[in-house]
Image 1 (spheres, rainbow, N blue to C red):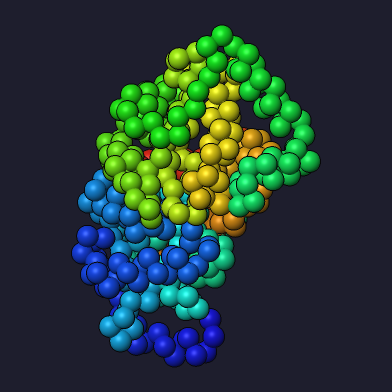
Image 2: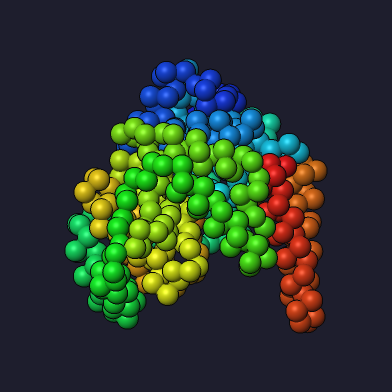
Length: 370
């Protein structure tokens, strides 16, 4: 941070509000900041997404930084119940950060301190925002399909860089075209059946793989329903589906802004697994995306092969925590340091247990809004 910016900090006031409590001028400023910064094109930064989170969770808040009565930055988050604040939607958030006036660089730790929030844990903060890098312990990226030049241009680039993957996808699509009854793609499946089918498939998948069923937590279902109710030029809930021979084979629930669609929750029927319906649903979504005016589809972070094969580039993200020297922050640091020491010790597989246990507790507490 430059010296001139440091001198400005004492003049900044920070208030804590629910999204529904933001004034008309604050809402306008939020949207202006997002429109002016290409790094904030994700639906996660839309004011409407914060409003959806408030419908689903009572601890949804926005830290509003103002200077001389004018808003200059917003940090939306979930406050939790024991002092551990997290990004909007907690573990469901792939991308998050500060929404600020163009050209103004604000320290999120300073904003948190002024709002008396002791700890903010993040797992997908924009690496381009320097304030989060000071508390980062991990770095990764969110994959994006670049469709700004159209589907054909994206397909040609992927054919050059991932020829085997694209060849396999084209072969599977031809099989569907030749199949009696064929297949159909619905870009906006507004019926309740598609959403309920996705929720059932995801829960069955979690049980099969022994992973915690996120959809067993009521607020998560409520959030998806709130997102799908939003249909405007600025923010839209997305529910797309793929039918094979008249039967629903794959569903995706996500969200989109004017510029970017975020591919959030895809699922498919295991009975159709030999057709790769989930990947074909993504491919069909990519075909239609440019016609909707979107420049791309964001897949989120993760080392999955299909993301590497289909993604054009990555948006840098960091994970870590920011906080004041409080009991909560100190205890978290001690636990993580102990886990790190055990991991470096010559104990074989046993060395990974403390970190795994800590990660599991952290993840469950995030789901249950602790």
